[in-house]
Image (tube, rainbow, N blue to C red; front, side, top):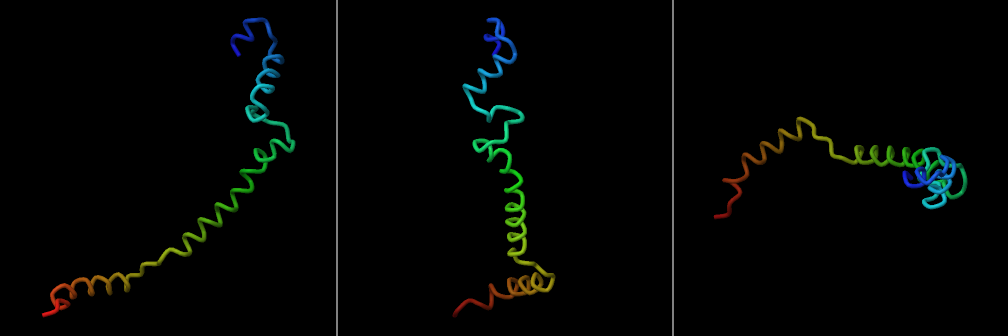
Length: 86
């Protein structure tokens, strides 16, 4: 870009060169067209999908109640000596 500006190109010419070489994806605000549809709609479509995935993961995780923790603690404490076969 610096080379093109020092060669005498205007800002618009440099801008057009960059877009022609790399496409609309390098623009801060790309035009809304079929080729840039993913850029415009990707984030809004992925947000609800990610939120649902997080909610399903949290809902599927086991809940650890105090009673279950106490029961596991009692089982672990009593089992090593009495569980051995003779």
